[in-house]
Structure formats: C-alpha cells, structure tokens
Length: 89
Image (cartoon, rainbow, N blue to C red; front, side, top):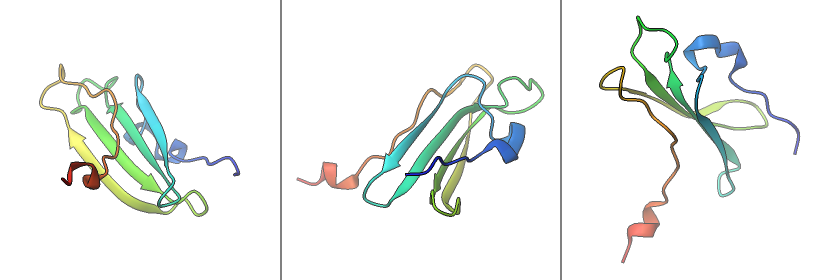
C-alpha cells in the first residue's frame, strides 16, 4: 500500500502536540485517525479531539467528529472504533 499523507494541510486545526493514533479498518479499507489534543498549545482555545475516517486512495473524509474537552485540564489520550457486534449476546 502506498504512503498516505493526511492532515498536514489542516494545520493547527488538526495538529496534536501530544497524542494521536491511526488504525487501519480492514473491513472498510479506511484509516481511523484520532488527533487527540488539538489546541493544547493554544491557551485561548478549547482543547478538542478530532476523529476522522478517510479513504486512503482518495483522502476523502468518510466520517469526522470533534469532541470538545470539558476544561483545559481534561485532555484525551486515544480513541478506537468498537464493533457493536462485540456486545451482542
């Protein structure tokens, strides 16, 4: 698979100075990306986590969600996709 570049063009609106993660979603052929502490270095802004799912062939966004922190002391670490079938009994 070719190298996928995503996020650099979004600048500080996507940059996490501390933690982020990328996970390949084999069942969808997409990447799930968590940029976990956006705005951490910008004290005038609310810290948020940005969750994105992209198609690596086109860089098209399939899903995106911002999760704002409750306070500047409340920072995120990581995120992951949970298959809802795990909870079926």
